[in-house]
Image (cartoon, rainbow, N blue to C red):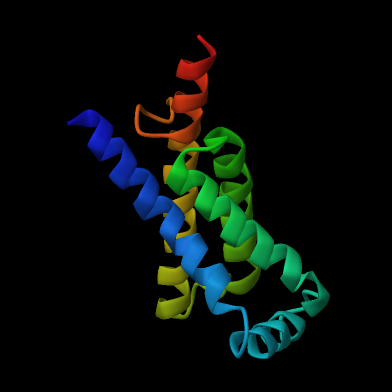
Length: 129
C-alpha cells in the first residue's frame, strides 16, 4: 500500500505545478506576464516559470530526479509566495501565502525520502543492478 500512497502523494504535489504551467500557455500568457510586471517581476521570465512548473511538476509525478525537482519547486514556491502573496493583512493573500509555504514543506519532505517503487528513478536503479 505504501508504494501507491507515495505515488498519490507525488501526483498531488506535482499536479498543481503541471496544471499551473499549462494554464499559462496560450490565452493565459499575456495576463500572467502583465501581472508579473505589475508586481515588479519581469514578464520576460515567464517562459522560465512555465518550464519549471511543467517540467518540474512532471518530474515529481513520474518520479524522475525527484529530489532536484522538489528542491527547485520548493524554492520557487517560497519566492513566489513572498513576492506575490506578501500582503498578509488581506485574508485571501495570507491563505495563498500559506498554501505556497505548505507546498514547499511537502516538497522538502519529499527530498528526504526515496521516490518509491512506482517511479522512473526506481525502474532505472533496478534495471542497472
